[in-house]
Length: 455
Ligand code: UDP
Ligand code: UDP
Image 1 (tube, rainbow, N blue to C red):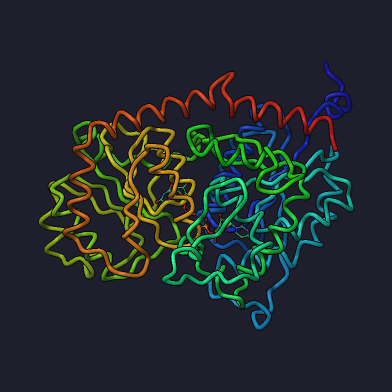
Image 2 (image 1 turned 60 degrees about the vertical axis):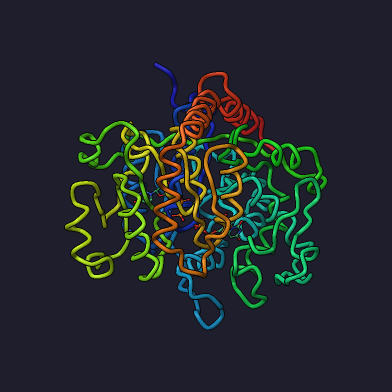
C-alpha cells in the first residue's frame, strides 16, 4: 500500500481562482478538468458571495465528478460602491474580488500538500501577483478571450493616454500594436475609451502586471490566430513576455450536460440556425423584434435562446404561433456544447463571446458573427480570418439591424456549401489539436511539466 505522505510529495497541487461570470468560469472549470485528468490535485477557489446560481452549480458538478478537485471558499469583503465607478455587476464583482485579494494569502499558504502554482484570471491578475510573489508561488494566467485581445491587454498601458476616440480621418482611426495588423479604434471595448471607467482602470493595471506571470494560457489553437500567438511569443508585441501557451479549444465536459433539446433530434441534418448571445448580453427590445422578424423571413429552422422573460410580448404572440413548426424559442439556459455538437445545427448566429467562438470551431459549425459589446469585435475578427464564417461589420452595436437584412444573410450563409466545408475542416483541426500528440495537448503536458519544476 503506498504511503500517503509519499504520494503526497509527488502530487502536483494547483489552485485555480476564476473571476465572476460564466464566460470566466466555464474555461476555468474546463482547465481544472484537464489538469485533474492528468493526476493533478486541484483546489478550485470560489468567491462568496457569487453572482449567480448557475456558477455555483457548475462548480459543484466539477467537484463531485473529480475526487482530486476540492472547492475552497473565498469570502469577500463588501465593496464600497461610492469608490467604484461602474454599473456593470461583473466589473463590480471583479473589483470586489480584487480588493479582497489580501485574504487569499492564508488560503493559499494553508493548502496541503503545498501548492505549486496558482492559475488566475485576466481581470484579477494585478491584485493577485503581489500575493503569489510574496508566497514565491508560480502564477499563471488563464486568458479567456482571443489572442488579439491579449495583445491589446498587454499593449494598452502604453497607449492608454493617447487619443482613442474615433474620428472621420482614417489614418488616426487605428491602434498600432507592434507585430500585429492595426486594430480599428471602433473595435475597442467601449469602457476602455471612457477615462473614468473602473473597467479601464482595472484593464491598465492588469496589462502592466500580466507580463510578470509565469505563463499565459489561451483557449486557442493554430486555426484561431496562430499569427498573433507567434507575434506574442516572438517578442514582437513586447519584449520579455511570459510564454503564451495555446491549450484550446477547451472541450465541453460530460458533467456540463443538461437536459438535451430534444426538438433538435426531429430536425434534418444541418437545417437549424442556432441563435444565442451568451449569458450576459442584453439586446434592445427593438433589436430582438427585428431579429425575430429576420429569423422568420429567412425561412430556415431555428433554435433561438433569448434571455428575456417576456419574449412573447416583444416579438408578438402571433410570431410564436406562426413559427412554431419551424422554430423553437428558449428562455432558459441551454447546454451550448450539446447544441453545437448536434448534427441538425448548420449555423450559429453568435455575439462573438470567445467561449462561443471556440465551441463553434470545435464542432465545425459556421458562425454568423454579430458582436454586441465588450471584447466581442476584437474576438470576432478571427471568424472571417480563419474561414469559420462571416462577420457583417456594418452590423454595429448601436444602430438597429433590420429583419430583412438579417433574414437575407442567414439564408445566404445556410446555402453556402464552401463555408460548411471550411468550418468542418476547422473542426477537424480543432479536434486534432486537443487529441493525443496535438499542439494543445502538448501545451497542457508542457504546462504540467513546467509547474512540476516550480519557479
Ligand atoms: N452558454 C450556455 N448556454 C447558454 C448561454 C451560454 O451553455 O444558454 C455558455 C457557452 O457555451 C459559453 C459561455 O456560456 O461557454 C458563454 O461564454 P462566452 O464567452 O461565449 O460569452 P459571455 O457570456 O461571456 O459573453
Ligand atoms: N479583461 C482583461 N482585463 C481586465 C478585465 C477584463 O483582460 O482587467 C478582458 C477579459 O479577458 C475579456 C474582456 O476583457 O476578454 C472583457 O471582459 P468581461 O468580463 O467584461 O466580458 P465577458 O467576456 O465576460 O463578456
